[in-house]
Amino acid sequence: MKAFALASPGQFKMFETDIPLPGDNDIQVKVKVCGVCSSEVAVWKDLNPSEPLFLGHEVSGEVSEVGKNVKRFKKGDRVSVLAEKGFAEYVCVNEEHAVPLSDETPYELGLGEPLACAMNATKRTNVEIGDTVAIIGLGFMGQLILQGVKLKGASTIIAIDTREEALEMAKELGAASVINAKEDVHKKIMEMTNDNGVDVVIEATGTQPALDLATDIVKIRGSLIIYGYHQGPPRTINMQQWNWKGLDVVNAHERDPKVYMQGMKLGIKLLEEGLIKMAPLVTHTFSLEEVNKAFESSVLKPEGFFKAVIKR
Image (cartoon, rainbow, N blue to C red; front, side):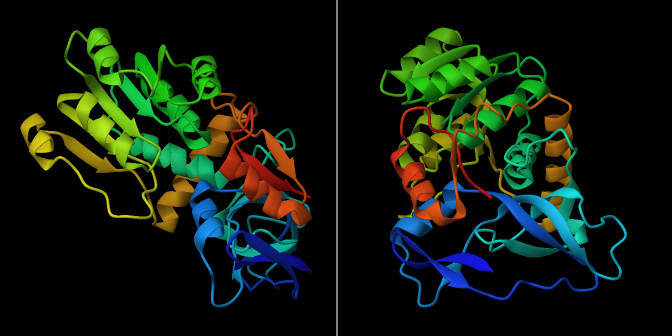
């Protein structure tokens, strides 16, 4: 089968590999869609692997074979899976790492892994009914988290980003106010909150300036939720301000597969009930052979860009 792996910085290459065979408790999935995750983009840009590195973990597709002990799935079932090496024609996963998709859910929208990340992050926040929440960074994941905290009861969501189209999308998905990060964000937040700051701030960019801004605009005894994936140079924090404000600080990433799967099941459920909107956010589609172009678009973010997927 065809499988693409990172061979050098900015360059996936195609390899012919054996089709993976399912173990007794596994399902083999014919990959229909694999999303490009922002955490992989930095790897694609900068890493020079010593051997080919197979990426791709946001997979949905059709069950093509099942192991002898598999009870929950059969050939032909539509699934979203927690997988590896997804920029390929087939993957195999344990049946416990798969969630069924309804016939009405397009594969490109049934991306359970990012939905799991967003819903698990939402659950880790201590947002309560009536809270004012600021979200810094309204890319694909920020827009999903925005919808999650809206469902959780936030009465006022303030979206902060540098891209006007991201702010417009945030308004469509439930933000009450938007602020361009090029403006005096602190001043505007204080005007909106009677000089108190926000109850909860969610940092969803993975950058030092966003971390600094989050510290600056959260209220005394408020909550600072770090969702952004911080790669590169070590970050610094203003511990004096964290101490003085008495902040609750939460790192809202999960790594336990069981917790991942709880979030995936919840995310797919909310998606299929129409409570989470994915369609406006999956904006750019590429073939498997165009995987490098998909990553390029994720770096350059052309007009209208939120999410790139590889579709077969």
